Amino acid sequence: MHIAFVASEGVPYSKTGGLADVVGSLPKALASLGHQVSVYLPRYRQTKLSDPQTVVRSVTVPFDDHYRFPSVVTAGMVNGVRHYFVEYPAYFDRDALYGTALGDYIDNAERYALFCRAVLEASKIVGVPQIFHCHDWQAALVPVLLRSLYAQDPAFREVGTLFSIHNMGYQGVFQPEILPLLMLPWDLFTIGKMEFFGQVNFLKGALVDADLITTVSRKYAQEIQTAELGFGLEGVLRNRAGSVSGILNGVDYEEWNPQTDKYIAARYSPQDLSGKAKCKADLLATFGLEDTKLPIFGMVSRFVPQKGLDLISQIGDRLVREDLVLVALGTGEKEYEEMFLRLQRQFPKKVAVKVAYDNALAHKVEAGADIFLMPSRYEPSGLNQMYSLKYGTVPIVRATGGLDDTIEPWDARTGKGTGFKFADYSGETLLLTIRLALVAFRDQSSWQVLMKNGMAKDFSWQAWAREYVKVYERVRHTHAGAAPSSADDTVIAAQPSVPQPSKVRG
Image (cartoon, rainbow, N blue to C red; front, top):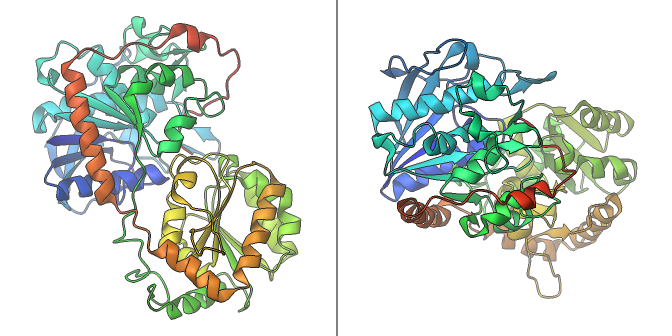
């Protein structure tokens, strides 16, 4: 089967979050199963290509003001996957992918509309796939275009679409005037298509028009059909419930494995954990902290409310008075960056933070910490809790999305479980759970059982890739039948007040 991934980011070429890890790993796993896989990405300033070759010199993309002419280059085959890059410097040669500290780029709708059209046109030259697997709102126009402007194009008659939601909170919402600028028909601006409370919602268009929909954990597939986490689109998803499934993200253990990790001070395994103590000492030294026997709590996160940073803010002053050391790595909203920096100034022997994205240091945190904090408000899949398990770093998570699917509560009496989790979204409940973990940590013999339980878990991509193959086969069967039904207008219209989605991933 030939599957073409369409996404706004993918490692090792571009990254802001977990989407890039999936787009970097899943195609490789599918290729190892014998499938033909292509990946389409924008060519950003941060995209480093050693020997790019132009495969499509010019693609014509119509806009109402004037035509634009992106090109498409390839980086060749990597791990059995061919990567293509849409090149249009006016849109993609920028400091960041989606926006700056001042906000989203004002032309994001144009940028990713051009990207989607260029992918479709380029595929007619380099090879039309059997499945377009599209990810998040930036690729959402692919299924929309195939159902509208390209519906009569014989090149795509047998092509199915799978749309994957990585985070419902980011939807691509724009003013209605964007439709004529992008040369999209006004009949898309209806409640059964892309209209969303008087605006145009790219994500909604894909949820209506894609043959099938996946998201990144079973629990999250259920959660996004509720008012709490559907962000106003729960009615669309409930109406298509039979087309929605959850497949957990996998882990690339070639990169995230303490037995082979090139970034950590010492390698270790479940059979020989001695290297973890060296990693702990190295982590403390890297953050400028004194060596200590206290447990290290690690965080690698975007500093945003979704990640539970508001809970850390509620309990910060009490948390650091516990018998622990806290190290945090990440960037995000100024409020939370300043919160960590304030705690560091007030408790320099107990708290250290680096406000940055640093992949090498993220590996050091995973290896050197004893406990990993992920108190997310919601977490579609999560990867760090799975990394932590492999590194013998015990996760504390909130029971939501993929965190709930992957972490089993520790029971010292039976010796079963892999971490600690809590349900109530409050600082007090988080602090109570942290204290339970501290009690468990004091019994090092029992703690090593807990560590090894986690290290024995296997969340590799191979099993999940086979699940995706089953979905691709369903897409082909579904596409051969009737088109998906449009959204249930009554259900959607009955949502007078909804959480406000963001335009971009953040």
